Image (tube, rainbow, N blue to C red; front, side, top):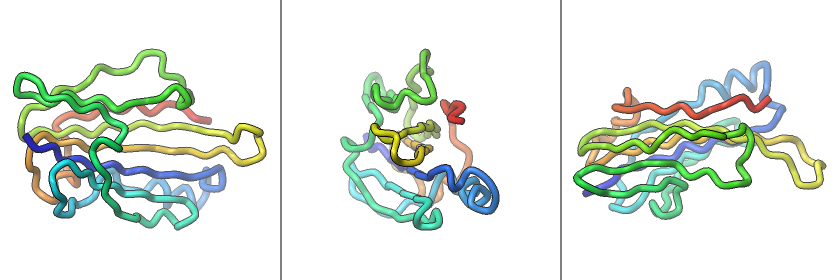
Length: 157
């Protein structure tokens, strides 16, 4: 069966922590209308502070999106991957994977905070949203309410 996937990746620094820049950052949508893409390809929207949080759309192979997807027993098991270097905020206990039936979709939100290895650069922040559907979905599907919602965002001070 077809997997419909969208990854919304936002990146910003402490310069967008407050004031007008934070208002623009906080207005970033959690989903976009889907372009026509071939099977096995995810729609990716990148929104960066240095670009004024204007969305830049691209596409990537589903294999390159950091989400584990497995089909079994007529359902799609979805679990975003979080590597060891993505330790802030701490994730001692992660939510379980979500199993989607055909026609259902999931919105999973995560966030991260990074510093440079030498401490010479500002902190950077990466909120990610994964919109994953099992089967063909209409172009406006990710603009609405998901069947399942997992919010794994934590404090990043």
